[in-house]
Length: 483
Image (cartoon, rainbow, N blue to C red; front, side, top):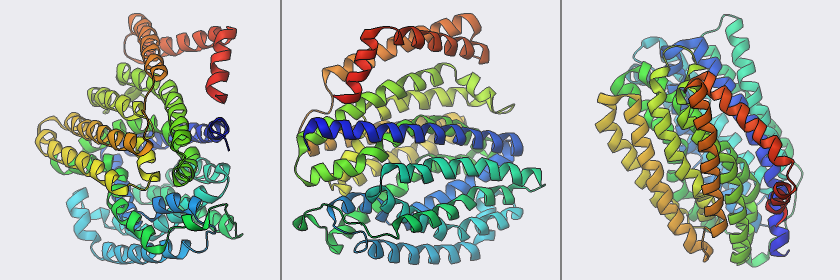
């Protein structure tokens, strides 16, 4: 394929990923709202703590095999050769962790939840680790070898839609936190079964024979990624756990709610990553770095166009967004504003993490993530006891910025071309200016609360309709789509 064809292909897949990301984000917000309004700061803090613990445990037990499959399968002729070597060690380790966790549940519950009643919740969480791990690995194979719509349908539609529905059902039947977490876990089992069905039919790729990664090469990539993926998955949860231990469960609940908002904007980038990661792996594996760079730059333009306005609005109208969660969460507004600014850097550099991994440099990615984690933990220890959720937000922001700067430098070397062009800089400036004007109107009319946010969104909707009536704007959007 030509470079232009590759860019068009990435755009088509990106649209599918963005639709999935939008649904995922919407129902993720619904899930968070259900949790915080049903269980309050204390109960939601406990539930988010357990979700964070099982998320980190699952990421560690995956041993980086899910990302390694994403990197290796586009260069491999069949799925069957590498899938067993990815599954056996990860499933085995997850079973060991599950047994150990179930046995240690009383002690872990007392340390993290400050209550013996959380033992049953901890046991269920650890029992679900093998389910999460096997599902994650199988879905990675689906993502690498099947049409992007298959992965999006399971991971971005089925799972996030089912979770709040099941949790609401649990609450209406009189269930507590334990049954609520079971509702969070059950869709993972459904995703696992669907992934098995999707992978049942053998499918051959067009990979060259000399490009096939061997088992040693596979795990040489996966093992460094095993550490960095755990850090990626636990970037927010480390702050939640430390905040709960150093400042109490109420502050942990506030920080978890704030973090949910901050991560919601990343779903746009995640949707595009789902679409282009296998394509970047193939292009870099074929030595077509200019085409890979073109795909990266076009994707970065879409990320800035869609994510920067959201994060700017999130920072300015933080009190309004937290007001939706109810009383007790308004104190998190400064923390949300800090995280939103840090996320501008995160999304502004584009898919540098994906480029780094799909080029095979999992060790470079590990360097970036470990540096960010060390800064995050050190700053949490210093700031959280005195500042609570705000201290955790500042600590996480430091880690985010440093990690992305390091990754951007290494990704630029992998592509061998500039990451950013003049078009992206102009576009970013225009987006910032336009969003600033809209926010100023909203704040002037209704303040930073829900009234001001409503005014700002109304101005955005009106301006969008007016812009679409201009043929020059429509031509620019078509250019972004097909060039």
